[in-house]
View 1 (tube, rainbow, N blue to C red):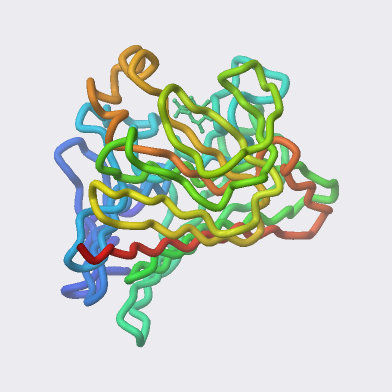
View 2: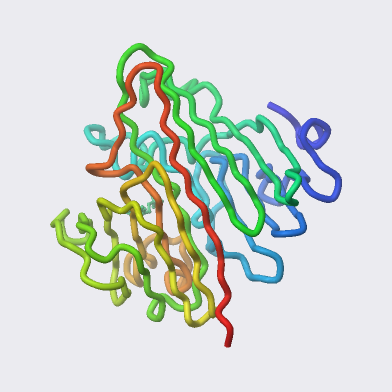
Length: 303
Ligand code: BG6
């Protein structure tokens, strides 16, 4: 594993890309360019901050987050892979897979001619995870950080048997007030309601929040928009390679039980997760790959 100074020597770009070890002992890459700032933890390749220039972060991290080796931080954009939610047959396996708990490696860092910055990371050989995932696969993440945030997750099946992969980019968006936001773009989509024992319903109109919400939307390939009248912005979420979108807010009772979400944390976050979940898990034939792409854009509303 590289030290922070080694990472800076290999991949640092003066004034643009800097590796640091923070007060919790987490190795982070910090990006500052003419279009945006961002911060990503090498543990889990977990994005913790992205703000287009002149704006607050679009990404929420709990002020009660626990920073511990092998534990995902509450907030940011954890990577759920190679399954989403509980494992289908093993209750003792970690929820949302193991990619979010492991240290990732930097593959390359590039300053792009348009002023944005591209980071490529790889989840290294899954030692210690053979029992959890006895398959020969590779997972890469490519991020382009600028006025848009683009994140691609690429899974390759290196083995000689088909493999079924579930995943999500479990992004916690920073919002002004959960009671006032609405989510557009999922109208007419069927969804699995995890709060109601997996019942299936169809979304009528925009989504608004009045209670715990935990849903996997299916047939969801269109762009989704988070309209936040309190922060006066719309976050646009575009996707490819994903036909499911998870929408989650734990509301007060569950958030209180979670300890790392903070007393009123749930009011300032909403998870909108581009996914391959439920009916949308992907079967990768031997030798094939699958790319799931998301692109976030923040549009400020004129007062
Ligand atoms: C969401 C799930 O994606 O993640 C929820 O739909 C889950 O059911 C939530 O509670 C948080 O998961 P975790 O493992 O990070 O606490």
